[in-house]
Image (cartoon, rainbow, N blue to C red; front, side):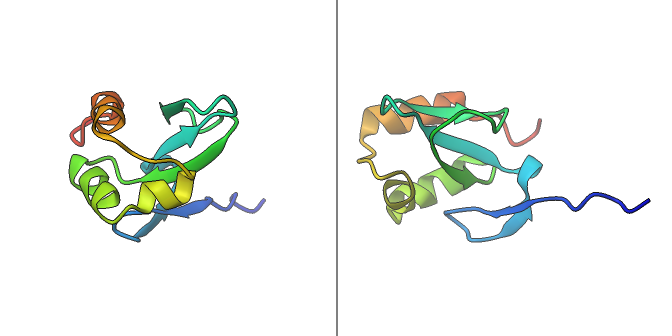
Length: 90
């Protein structure tokens, strides 16, 4: 019996390729709501980030989240995403 292949995704900020389970998915739902999707199963347009605030800040600075999700990331949205991000130690 063969082992299942692990899907990999690329962080939009630092561009490192990791297994999908190690990254955090930011999703824009069909109703244009932006959420942190820890399950990875919500419907909508998604972007993957490393579970660190540094990668989030880098993605915002480079406008990588804006390109990936097709939205404008303002201060309120940045703080909301930061609050929902899991800690790097977990």
